[in-house]
Length: 274
Image (cartoon, rainbow, N blue to C red; front, side, top):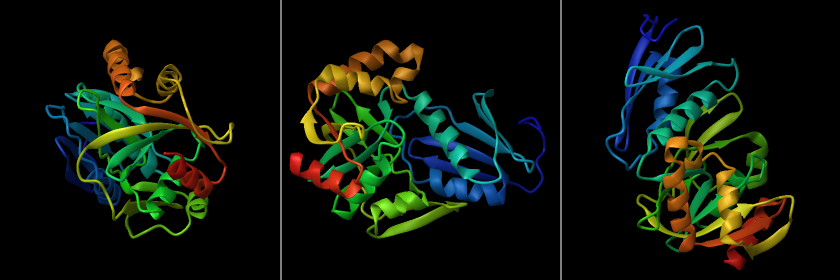
């Protein structure tokens, strides 16, 4: 089915995600949980073109920006919500021109932002969850947004996608709201969230292969680690600007490497080390 074709049981939901807008066309049982999740984010950069998402009853989804098809995905029968969220978030960050982004977790401790980067399986979600248990405020579990000129990190409060094994690693969370569920994944919105940008204090590279307390990391090594994550470096037309802006961020930010297979121990080491 093409994006312009009619879809049975169509429901249009308009999501206002800060300064960005998403139009969802498709079955209500798909668009409603997707709207609930995307409504939690607030893109602070204006003048971004809207995303049109078309979802068919047969499980095919399309994303369009300014009349151009930017992605197509066949949804699995289980965990179908995750790819829709991923493609929508990926579209949002691909449109940014003023702000930097990197795939990361981020929290606020004592009024300052701490960004946790690392490869898949490094424990970012678990680490964020344990830090929330210990009194941190939530910025993001998915995307860290930087204003390089101001030295600030913005909230990107997409609900935490908590799988059963992640829930076991985190333990009891502080009050959260169940926004949506997808098979065995729960999308949980922490109650204690940052509602505006905060000064960026530290970037922390989570490296489970090298178990250690936080140790200072040369800026060049952190820059390399950032370039290996999904980030503003991904887009060729923004590569030069991303490089200079990330260098600016690192010039005024502390960088650390740490690793632990136990999120509770890692959170304790991070607080003690910082």
